[in-house]
Picture (cartoon, rainbow, N blue to C red):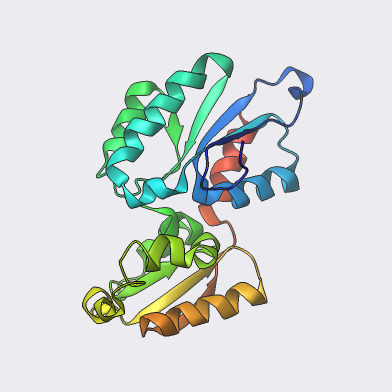
Length: 215
């Protein structure tokens, strides 16, 4: 099975410590690197990770159904499930379905918000014209931005698609000079001003800390 964050992958790190019930994180593949980093850093060996394909973000109408399928497959095997998606373009459907299924999920409209911190992100009233990239999207810019928007074959579409944007904001989860340089190149390719903003893991870290601490 591939370990690419865009593929479905289940990681398990051994036996449940001290009788604590195991927790399954059902997550967007675009968050795999960040979740695994937090697991390693905090020793959350009682948490397993099930990633759904990151490309579901190109088809948000499919996210709710795929999350529900994952819950059905795994809920009998774990003491608790936690969905590591925000609303992610589902128009509230994912939150409503998770409530019906009795599983919790990360709060927020999308990962750009919870990486910065939902309260802090909501305080921005001047960023309706900002286009956001995370570490994952910087690494996968061509696969998740350039090609899906047809810019690889029709670069003339850039002005039509991004004409109302004024800047590209790189929300960095890690302090990586190579990713900074690549993000700046992405901004130039889109004809946008560039802003670097180190966010770390934001409310994702907080949400996972809360889940890890529950009995």
